[in-house]
Image 1 (cartoon, rainbow, N blue to C red):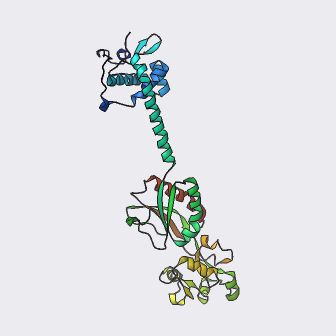
Image 2 (image 1 turned 90 degrees about the vertical axis):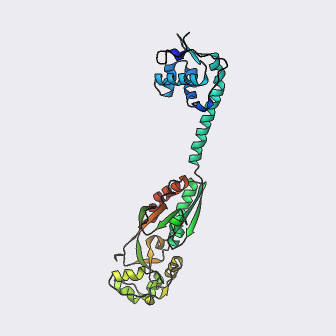
Image 3 (image 1 turned 180 degrees about the horizontal axis):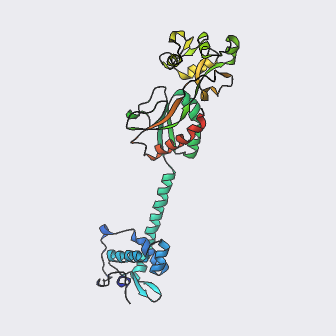
Amino acid sequence: MSAIVRSNHLNNNRPTRHTSHAHMHTQDFNWTLIRSFLAALEHGSLMGAARALGMHQPTLGRHIAELESQLGVTLFERTGRGLQPTADALRLAEPARAMAGSADQLARQARGAQARVQGTVRISASQPVACVLLPPVLVQLRTRLPDIHIELVVSNAVSNLLQREADIAVRMVRPEQGTLVGKRVGQVGIGAYAHRDYLQRRGTPRRPEDLLQHELVGFDRQPDIVRGFAAMGHTLTKDQFALRTDDLVAYEALVRAGAGIGFLAHYVARQSPELVHLLPLASIPPLPMWLVVHREIRSNPHIRSVWAALSTQLPAVLGS
């Protein structure tokens, strides 16, 4: 009978091969042809095998011919009932199935490895962000990605991503370095707040200029509050602050204790029902919140997963 290698879509002039003492050139062996061989063996025809694999019949025929050439054996003979496997084909069927099973197992393990993203991600954030915004977000993240470990760097200084002090930073300023990638995830609304006990004791300011007659909790070296008053047309020096600190957790604690009027992010003040939002119509520009990562490491699977989670969840917990 005519071998399949001599069928009408293959090379009709190729000489008959001897199946005995054939030697396979393993360095040229194409492992992907095994699927086509097993499909032809299972379905008994080129048409059935091609349909099962979703390929064209001539392509599958070329795969069989190439495999026969590489192995140095004839695998099928064409009969009126389709393809008849040769003794060599039956002998090679079992190791071929084992090879296909190993390939499937490798693919499953690769998919599993992708699903189980592993690694440690170092996140840098200011004290309020780290203490208020991030904890519920990180709880959800760890539930979804339990093999990712988080290192939380709590600092009010801007961590240097270029020096790899952190993998991802939550910043209130847009990154300017070309090697950093930033994504704006929302904005931080800011307001003047005081404890209700302080207001009972000192009265409630009705206009922005009334703030100057109150005890103000300010920053020591950080100039934002002084600049804010200057933008409203009021000259203020840090010596006019009743209490000063650059530690943001201590700053909030002072306001919450009734030490005076301070300027807090809305998401921070919401944690303390005893704080009263003053002058809600006063225009205090919100601060943008940025996620920042070094361009070179953003492609790391575990960093990319954390980046995606923060990008999705931070806007929800941030509010404005």
